[in-house]
Image 1 (cartoon, each protein chain N blue to C red):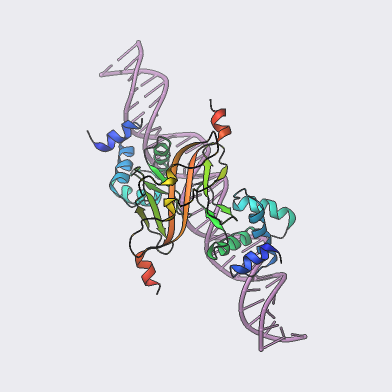
Image 2 (cartoon, each protein chain N blue to C red; image 1 turned 90 degrees about the vertical axis):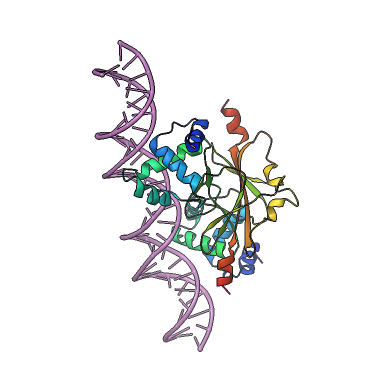
Length: 138
Length: 138
DNA sequence: TTGTAATTTTGTAATGATTTCAAATTTATA
DNA sequence: TATAAATTTGAAATCATTACAAAATTACAA
């Protein structure tokens, strides 16, 4: 059984052609794509795919916790098919997003929220300059 | 000397009437306001204040590190006049943002970024349900 | 003080991401 | 096979943000 289809089924999502294509794109690309990037690439292969379907599908995937929504970039929402715990870094110059490992037993995973709060997701974001942009600036 | 004016000066920002009003609003409100909230409230007192000035000023304040930009909410950018280290929680039901203390010596502050990367800011975000919305849902 | 340049503010128009909506298509089921 | 339910689609609407150029204000030199 296709691991993408299995992933969708395990999150209670019916695997339509479009949903599988979008989920597969996310799982096979570690680029943290935006809606536009997903549309640009998938539309080339599936000319009937509409942007509305991408929006619909991404919000369904979010609701069912089948992907991770990255709000690290104030200009665009990015999506990550890898839902395992890791942090992200965005370069303020080239806007590229990088995966950053989270140290084991990190305290950020156990937040000091008020009584009665239920934490569902944790996001750790860094911004600054990546290697290349840093040396280019000097 | 007004502490708001001092704050601006210490970040190399000339304290115009508008900039002081916007910075004061951020420092005196712990509500993590959006551009619209700032405009709504300040426009009532300063009818000539334009939204463009708020956008211009907020991006200047960001560039000079005089405020913190919160990208926790995918729908709107929020601003925080408190630049001391703390995390944030957003309730997925009522969309309210709460300040959360960061444990001393937390590992998130010392990220494992690749060689040559320069980390300028760290953001720790949580989402889930707040106290009230959690009990309202049962 | 006065004139001139530089900076800041403002309103309007343009842009671009996202949502709404209703029709068309596809899938599930009786 | 017929009918209902779910999904997809494209066009139009919405809403946050940016671009831009004119107006107002401030800084500064004569």
